Length: 382
Image 1 (cartoon, rainbow, N blue to C red):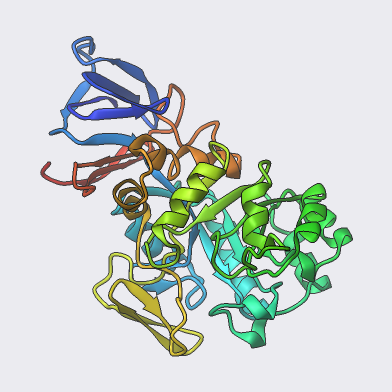
Image 2: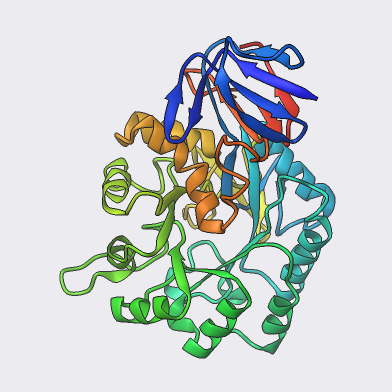
C-alpha cells in the first residue's frame, strides 16, 4: 500500500522540514515531497503537528514490559520487551545480556539466532560482560565475572548473521583474544573497566571502537591519568554511548561530552530494565529486588541498576536539560547508533529505499504514532 504522511515537521538530513509529505510504498520509504504534490494513488494520513522522525534505535536494552531478558531468555519475553519499546517509538533494539552463567548467555543468544529473521525490530545482541574488572562491576554479580575461555569462544564463533556488540574490560583480555573477537565481526566496547590510557590506546589499534555508558562503571579522570572517561573523550575515532536519564550522568557532563566527541560519535542508550511500559515499579535481578525510587532504579546495595527511560526520554532530557539542539538529540537516538552498528544503509534516516520505521511525537515529547516497516503499530489522537 502506498501511504503519504503529512501534517508534522519531518526530520530528515539533520533538519526539520515544513509542509512536506513522507511517501511510503509497502515497507520502504519512497521519498519526501511537497505536501501539495501527493499523487492520487497515495492514501494520505494527516498528523496534527509534532515531529515525524526515524524510529529510535537503542543498542542497550535489558528489558521491558515486565520482562528482563536474562531472567527469561525466550521468544515470548523477547517479543514483550520489543513491544514495550515500540510503544515509545523505539523501533530497533539490541537486547542486552548482562553478566550471568554461560548457560543463560547460551539461551539468550540461541533465542536471538532463532528470532533474528522473524522480528524486524530485532537487530542482534549486546553481550555486556562477564569479562569485567571486578572493581567496576556495578550491579553485575561478582560470582559471574569471568575470563574468556574456549567455551565462550566456541559460542561467539557460532554467532553469525546479525550484529554482536561485546562490552568488556580491555585490561582483562589479551591482544590476541581481542584480535580474534574483532575477526568475528564483533563491535567491541570498553565498559566496567579501569584500563589506563595506554591500555586503551593499544586496544583501539586492534579492534576496540567504542565505550559503553560513558562515565558509569569506568575509571575517572585524574590529573596524571585520563582514565577511561578521559580516554573516551580524547579518542576521536571511537564512539561512546551515554545514558541520559539525568541520574546516571550530570547534565553538565552530558553537555560537555556532546561538545567534546566528534559529530556522530556520541549516541544515547537507555540501559532500560523490566519497568518499561509496565505497571510494576520493581523486578528481580540476580534473585534480589530492584525498585524504582524517584525515577532511579536501585538494588539492595543502593547501586543504580539500569534505567527506567526509553529513547524519547533521552531526547527530551538532552534538549530540555543538557543544552543539546533538538536535531542533534534526535540524531543521537536514530542515525548515530545506526552508523555505529553498521546498519545506517537502511535504518536511522528518512530517505528513499530506507525501511519505513517511524516515530511521531508532539511538542511535549509524547509518542503518538509508530510504524515499523510501514506497518502502523501505534496510533493515538494527536
